[in-house]
Image (cartoon, rainbow, N blue to C red):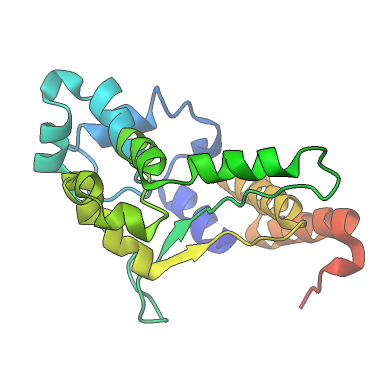
Length: 205
């Protein structure tokens, strides 16, 4: 990955300050207007942001439907296209003074109606089968056209070391994109950072 990113900067097809740009000033207005970008990787939740804040004067949703399509990350050696989701889990602590109240709150917000409001307003895909079957969700052009992506999704690891790994990986990306390190040096930076933070919880091969 670091060889790919470093090579993209070196060949001039990617900016060297990508990890530091203001997305609201550079990335979103460039991608949303859909006249100079062929492919862009982002989340479905970018859509309402673009419609409201970047192309409202061009027609908002209708402009995006006419000019932007949604697709999975293309298949490579695996032969399977993919996408990524970040599911969240609600948990009630065993030391809670009011576990019944906590459970009631979770139950109250985990309904098709509540989750539809969130999904439709922010263009996040549904989390309940009952949502998908509801008229409100099924009748939403955007969500119904993208929901199939969940058949091909992967999830961020549910592991206490995830944040450390993610932070180290990102540090390596910054190092090669800015030219502060070669891909090989970036790998060493990552290994050192992870070893310091996770110790024998990681295996380096």
